[in-house]
Image (cartoon, rainbow, N blue to C red; front, top):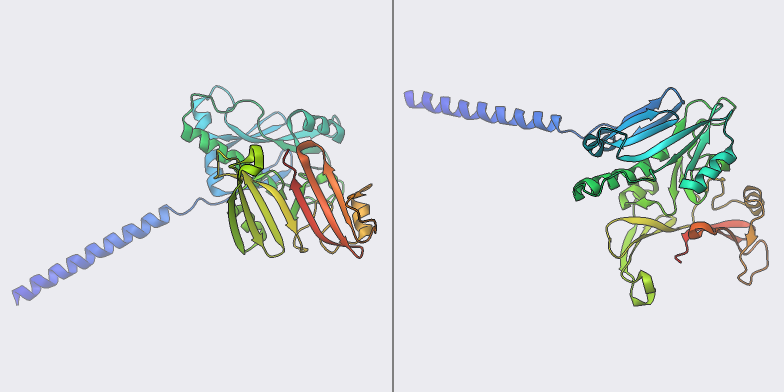
Length: 333
């Protein structure tokens, strides 16, 4: 009988210990839940951003004058004497003092990209043009900084103006009015831009384009001349094929080199998509010209918007006066 009681006490002790361990595990799991996304709202200038949880945990948002800086906490902690480790910035300009043409000059100077305008302000964004990570910084810190800098390119796609004040739509990203575009050489998934020559991961594109149908990888051979050894990644989605490029000394990080759209799931910043008419195309892109490939029928040919700078291009393939395909691509020099 005593033995039975002793065995019972042992069994209960084991059960109690198991319960305590299980609770500890569950508590630890709760404490380690992923960082929550942060909704950032700037009351002074009237705009909002959605900051992914991990990004929000690693950056500070600092406002100085007309500039809103997004600063790498790790880098800033090592250099507290000034704003350092800027992964990106939003610039605001009073419309009483600055015109849209003024911002175009800044775009030529240091790559400022236009975001849109409210009743009182013009908005733009850019990366820092000076050194933000000192040479003696550890390689890990440099890599973390570069990752945040690239993630800022995605974060800025969530930029929205709260109050336009003059009848314009509040969301700057995704406007069909060309003056509100983030980049001319983009396709819009809802209000999120997919931009040529921007850095992307497969997961970034799949979040915007849906389920990935297939993925292929190749390394360019000797016939590619100076690009020999570079990497090309081809991602296929329903109605779209994307090609990404990575330098030969990298192979892990890719920028978007080309997009071939054959469905109406996306549109250009000027509102043109597969299924648009020739009249709509010419209205959106004043002075657009036929590609001189031998075809002369204006309803059955291809039209091109080409940027001499950075070798960017958009082409529209027409069939019976209807857009059947849209291609965005970089011509490698």
